[in-house]
Amino acid sequence: MEITVRRLTADDAQAFRALRLEALEHFPEAFQSTYESAADLPLDAYAQRLRQYAVFGGFGDGELCGFVGFHPLKNPKIRHKGILWGMYVKPAARGTGLAEAIVESVVEHARGRVEQLLLSIITDNERARRFYEKMGFEAYGLERHALKIGEKYYDEEFRVKFLK
Image 1 (tube, rainbow, N blue to C red):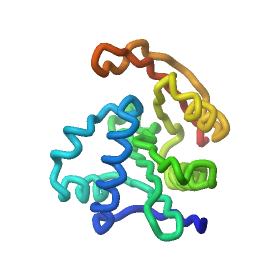
Image 2: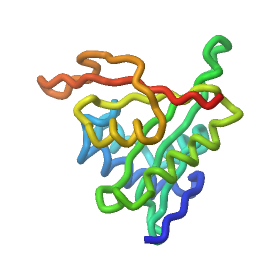
Image 3: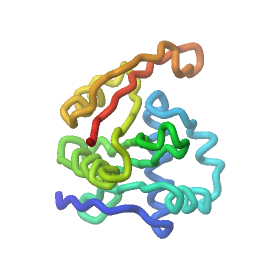
């Protein structure tokens, strides 16, 4: 598989929407958004998100197979921090190096813009926890019962990577 990574543009909205909906449908516990609310959004809302945030897409043989977003915080006292959000890689593209490539693209984009890169993951997601550990993100906090889907609660772990 030939892997390429680039920042997505509004022209990628349709592919981004399709992959985001796949992620929300198959892995609802990994995201704060729901499939239903995301499916109701018009295509232009996805295009707007791609204009508003830095979203990097990983392509395998020309097909969008994964993405991750970044946005710096704006408040003067916390603008030295940025958020890595929405990470998803198709199951078929996992283990190919695509996930590492898109996260490294965000890290490089964030470097010089922020000093800390923050993210959160559901503690049940051992694969994600191992991945972010390998990518240099350190755990610093835990929120119990952060998400509730039906009657099941999910704990959320917070991680940071210091860029400076």
